[in-house]
Length: 330
Ligand code: BDP
Image 1: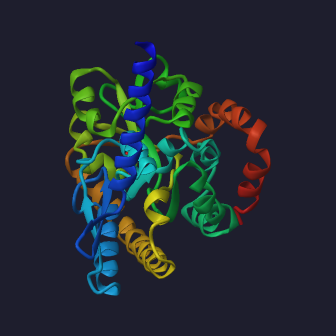
Image 2: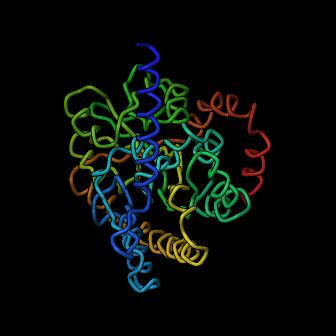
Image 3: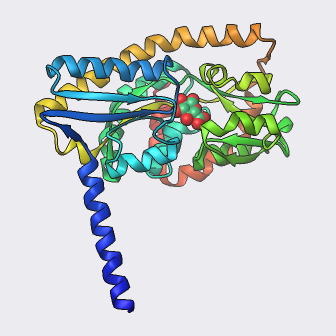
């Protein structure tokens, strides 16, 4: 009996693995159809980037490769879509780097609080050896990175009172992305991290399940979180880049010429997104101010001091990398 169950389990695993592999890179006749996921809504800069990528690939392959863009987390929340990209169920996936840390711990260095001194510093690192090596190194875990995107700086927003120093976070339940480094950061500052999918945050703020969350201005605005958490404190604790992932299962089935086309289109998407980002940040800030949100610019030093334990934790493994990033400030 036990043997039969074992045989059945192995068979199931085989069928599942085979069908997932078959799912990667769907073909409709001679046309290759790729699925691209994003948890932002249509119109958000990252989605616009993916849509440009889709148009360019269509044009450059004369319609031989189509990229269907699925915004609004319809293919799942970030953590799920990352797993599905590893399995090849999703071919292309634009995500924040924070949740990628769970499957590729080294990426934590790019999500560390206050690791980047400015947007220029961040892009110098991403476009340089460190950032570019990581795009290919993550292939070990089932996907490669095609390009990065901008996500500005993340800051706290809360329902009942503003966060003017880390002391104000004491005892507060703060939603974080499903990411060890983001949870460590909130704990180090004195808050209670509550990892949760992006799509669940609005109602969690509304019902009091959490006291606050943190994100960049365009996300704060797009999700309407500003309606229920009106105190926005620009402590700018983390500039977490975004990444466009491609499943290795799909990638390995493409010809070198097609790989090149997809890579070039992703780079064009990155360029467009970076331009849209600057405009969208200003629009979002103006909109939330007009809606009556209270904006604060707290002194950053106490927040920087509070996150030192996070550096200690990651320094044991990645000290050289952290030092190299820090040395690139100027
Ligand atoms: C936004 C990212 C999005 C993340 C979201 C979050 O663009 O991909 O899912 O934060 O906090 O800034 O979950």
